[in-house]
Length: 629
Ligand code: ADP
Ligand code: MG
Image 1 (cartoon, rainbow, N blue to C red):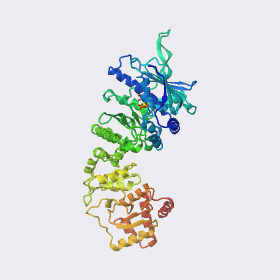
Image 2: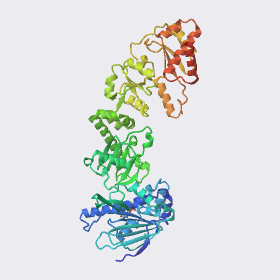
Image 3: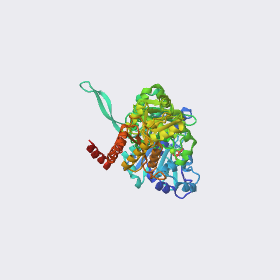
Image 4: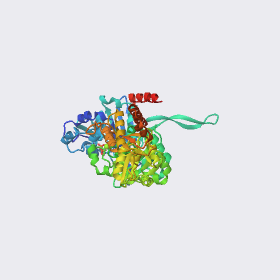
C-alpha cells in the first residue's frame, strides 16, 4: 500500500483554525505543553507495550527532544514513542474529536481560556495552529512492517498525507511558526515554557545542549583534570518526590524539593505526603509554610499536575479554601482540568478530593500534637490560623480539630478546649451556670482590665489574630453553656455575674447626686453614667462597652458600615465605683466647681487607661493635671 492521500479534516465548519488562533491568543504558550505531553504519552505507551510483550524491538534511550531553528523559523518536537501509521493519523488527527462545529461555536463564546476549549473538544494537537502557519508530522509506527508517513496541514481544513522520511520509530512534529508568534522563536522563551509545564515530566525532555566539566585524567602535578564537553540539556526531573513512596524519602528530600519549588522561601514547618488510588487517583506533597502577616500574598502556591504535567496553580475548589495557604504539589489524572469552575465545584471527584485532603491534614496535626506537644505549641503561632480558619469553615474539620486547637492566654500558656474548661470553671462560672471565657484583643490597651480580672483569679485569653472574631462566635455556638466576653466589656466585678454582689455604700440619694455630677462633667456623646458597688480597690471610674454592642459595631465595620448598625453611635458605660474613696470625697465637697473638676479628672483617667483620650481632650487633661498639682 502506498501512502498518498488528500482529504478534508472532518470538522463541519469552514475554517475553525482562525477561530482557535484568534480566540486563544492570550494563552497560546500551551501549544508546547500539549505537544510535549503527546510525545511523552507516546513514549509511555511504547514502554507499556514492551512491558506487555506486545513490542519486542529495542526501546533505546526513551527521550523527547525539543529543538529550535531560528533561521528556518521552526520548532520541532520529536519522540521515540510508538509512532503512528497513516491509518492512525487519519483516525486520531483528522477526525477531530468533537461532536460538531455548531456546538463548538456555541460553546467557545463562554469559555474562559484556551485550556477549557482544548480539553473539552480534544484539540490538544491542534493547539499547534495557534502559533503555526504550517504543521508537519513525520512518523513511523512501532508496528512490524509499518511505513513512514508524513502529514501536512496549513491551518485550513485541507490536509495531505504522503510517505514520510522517518527511519526510526517515533514521531516528529514540525511547527512553521507564524509571523504573530515569533516570540516563541527564542531559546529563553521556550526554556521558560518548558520549565513551567515540563519540569517534572516522567520522560527526559531534551532542549539543546549545555557545557559541562567532566573528569579528564590528571595534570603534570598529578591533580585531577576536567574538560568542558557538550552534553544534552535535560530540563526535567523524571521522578519527582511525590511519585515515590514516603518510606524511601528522607526529611532532606522533602526540604530540597521545597527549595526547588520555592527557591527563596524559608523552610516549611512540616509536610504531608498524599497518596490515594481509590476511589480516585491523587498523589502529592503539601507543605505547611511559615505564615507571614500578609497571608493573602501567599495564596495560589499549590501546583496542580496531571500525570506530572503542570496544569495550573489556581487550585481553588480542589483544595479546601482554608488550606489555600499551603504550598506544594497535587497530581491527579482524575481532576477534570479543562472544565469551567462551576462544573468543577459540582464534580464528585473534586468533592472527595477536598474531604480527603481535609482529613489528611487533620490527621497530621493530631499526630504532631500527640507525638510532641511542646514542638506543636512552638509551631502554633504559624498553624493556629489554618486550624481556626478550618474549624470555623468546615464542620468535618471542627470535629477533629476540637481536640488539637489551642487557646493561648495572656501569660502565653496554651490549653486544649477541654483543659481550658477545667482550668477556669471554678472561678468563671456565673450564677446561671454559664462558664464565661474572657479574652483580650489588644493586651497593651486592655492591660488595666486584664490586671483587674487576674486579681479576681480570672484567666484572660489572647484573641488577636485576624480570624479570632469568627473563632469566638464559633466557639460560642459549639461549646455548651459557654460565653465569651472581652475583658473590657464590663468592670471586673460585673464581668461574670455572681450571686454575691457587692453593695454600694452610697444611699440612693447620694447615687443620684453622683450621677448628676458626672453627667455634667462628661462632654463626650454616648456615655452613660451608672453608679455601681464595686470592690473599693477597683478604679473609681471605668469606661466599658458592652460585649453585645461591641460585636455589633465590629460587624458593622467589617461590613463596610452598611445597613442598620452602620451608623451606630458609640455607646459606652461609665461605671462609677460607689465604694471608692474618691467618690466619697467628691460628695463631701461643698464646692461645685471642685466636684466637676474631680469628676472630669477621674473620667479622663479612665479614658486614658484605655487609650481613648486623644487630641484636644488629652491636651486639656494634661493642663488640668498640671493645675491640680
Ligand atoms: P489527546 O492527547 O487528548 O488524545 P490530542 O489532540 O493531543 O488529544 O492528540 C490526539 C491523538 O493523536 C492522541 O491521542 C494520539 O493518538 C495521537 N498523537 C498525537 N501526538 C502523538 C505522538 N507524538 N505520537 C503518537 N501519537 C500521537
Ligand atoms: Mg494531547
